[in-house]
Image (cartoon, rainbow, N blue to C red):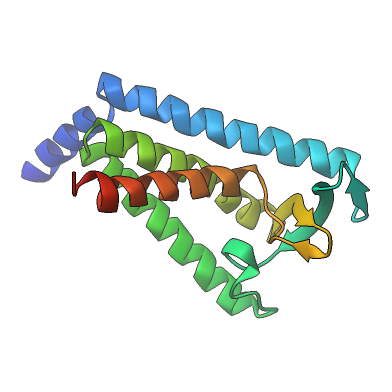
Length: 167
């Protein structure tokens, strides 16, 4: 009986009004990412599209993690990384539910982006990256909208943890 009581308490904690607000943030970020990727996949091929002197749209398929790290042709390794990413997202959701407001916002931003890329890993077996920032011959890593939100969330988290706590 305590297992059922435990599950009921966790369900009530998850569906609190403020958690629904953060679920909405996650959903908005996820759908912004899906919209951007679907637009690029429908309208662009794998050729580079010049936007201006600093940005191109250049569709590439990333089978690794952030910035193409750990890219491999091994299905076993790819599936293992995908499982680990799924576990990390699940842990972030759990931590987010138990966190305070600012932390919930930061985790929601990260989770929204991570879910966008995780969805692509499951559906396409790769993540479509298409934003190519550059200056002359220097090109930053090609990324997508989900990566932007993950980076923003991590940046806010670092500032909050290392700078804000010291004040």
